[in-house]
Length: 119
Image 1 (cartoon, rainbow, N blue to C red):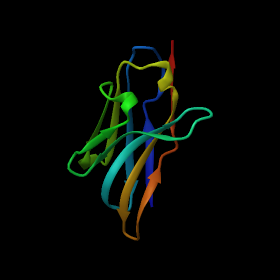
Image 2: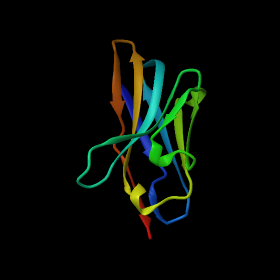
Image 3: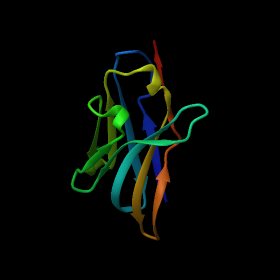
């Protein structure tokens, strides 16, 4: 089993910055990729940014140039640096990991962290 623990959410004014962290632990053999998703009230969960083995990244168009995803493989941790935040970035942000454990390969989710951007 894999546990993901997120931190770093909070309340910030428009134009401000936040850094989210997500640490993975458990019976992990290999993490193939990690990513951040978000879900605003009344909307579907959407991919914000992802990073796979080799450091290849992808971003939602709405956050390109403002958000940066990075990963510390030694710590099984992924980060999301969010700059120039906008009110429309307000959502619960979820960490996701595609990981292989001793028993299976699967997708795992964190509990979510709230990001609120005030105008």
